[in-house]
Image (cartoon, rainbow, N blue to C red):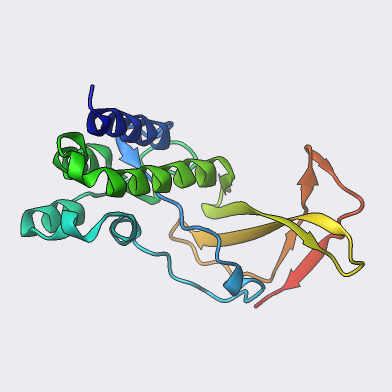
Amino acid sequence: MSVATTLFRTINNSLRELRRGSAGVIRLIEPVDVRRWGSGSKQDRITQPTLLSYALPPWILETQDSRDLLAESLRTVEDGPEKGLPGLDEAKIRALIKDAFERDDRNIADGFTFAKFLSAQIALKRSTSVHTTDELVRVEGTSEYLGKQKNHLGENVHTFAYRMSIENAGSSEFLLLGRHWEIFDNKEVNPSIPVQVVPKG
């Protein structure tokens, strides 16, 4: 078995893992951008095809057929907690990458880069929680481990970054008056972590 074939199988397994819980739809998650920390401002989501195109080598999208296939891959998640969120058609993504990574050993380096992107997406999916209220307000939180850093006392502590998004998934209007997050450690509130109430912003 060639390296290219093994790599393609690895990519296929990662795609299968990413679509778990949503039939035929892969939903990519934006990495947490610590430069936006604390801004509280409204930020538009990066579209699913654009997010995928950042990870693909440019030569894959050189043909119009490939660009059309990527543009046509946009779908909506139809079940589970991510219902209604944008995603990508798994079959179209597989078709897009099949010839590029399965048969040509010259594309191995790009294939490994793409496999690394998919691995990071699996980690992001595992650290993302989505909840939709009965009133169809969707709250999504993603955490990302930043490693050990020194706190204000000079102690090395584990540091995480978070991205929270609140979205009206229904037709009724709502007014956001404020936000309140409680950070849990091992499913219990950690008293050493102060609860921060973030005013409307």
